[in-house]
Image (cartoon, rainbow, N blue to C red; front, side, top):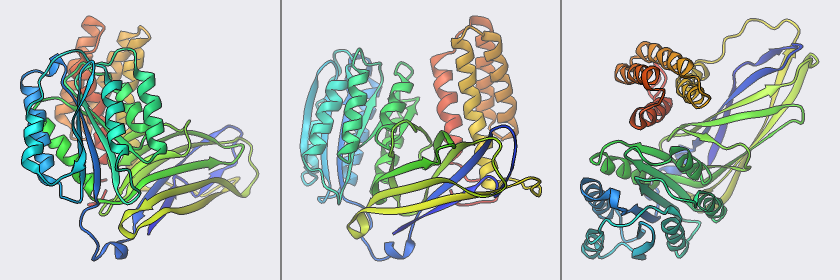
Length: 417
């Protein structure tokens, strides 16, 4: 039903006296012959958890209502929808129900009013509870959280709830609007379930982001994909990053690693970084076992599994070998994302000049990549950091999420993700 293709950064490694890095590019690809003649969209069990705190008053909440109306219009009677609004308490506006009376559902969404503070746990807990009412392996079970503020004192409870939701087969995607929300928290929340997190910088972008996320869920071929990375005892798993779709750092401390939805027309691509031990003997050796499991919705095949055992050759004097273009392209784009992270860490450690230097280097690389608008933003933030020793919230989030989104762009000369 789906295959796992693995490309190493090198086929032959040197027998060095120091550790060396090995990258693996993983592509999880749906089998196209299974798709033909099947249902065009997967049935959804969807819950919207919408922030209605005081800071959402005005254009933000108005655009959220329009986006919710649009999603209601796109759903079918086979889909289930729930809507929860929250501030410092949660209200279930629409209990989980089949999408049949769309006029009534839209009218209910329209009564939301902005008031109170932001406590995400109440809204998220109510949303997950609604999603559980119609939990089914044949459906896409997903919660979409939209907020514009930082939650107070309940982040760990939210993360524990997300991990439990993932065990039950529920994904969570999180979208932050404006500049005041905690992006690290929303990243962790999404990563715990295989969902995605996104930055919405204007109210009018709410519709675009929500619509794109719901459409990608509707394109599900398989759901609840999980990746287990089991390296040999002397091999260190350093990091993993989902490149496509919805670029997202993955938490390798929790295994299996949730990957979310495998869509019908695009693969899931993951870059894994391993550290190989020093002083290995020449010859072939095993490196890692990769295990991908998921529920194939389109064929009603739960817990379908693909396993790949990866081995590598070591030689005293291997022939010169360039890493594959796809890996070089991914590493180049990942470097841009990590450069803004290095700038942020430098500023946190009280090194504003180092932070500014990293941002200037990032701008140079962005200009070379043809990302002029983002490069100018990096220059602006470098000057700001030099002058005030702080990032602007808008600039920091914009650089973080937009450099990350570059990872989803196809490599030059390649029209497919």
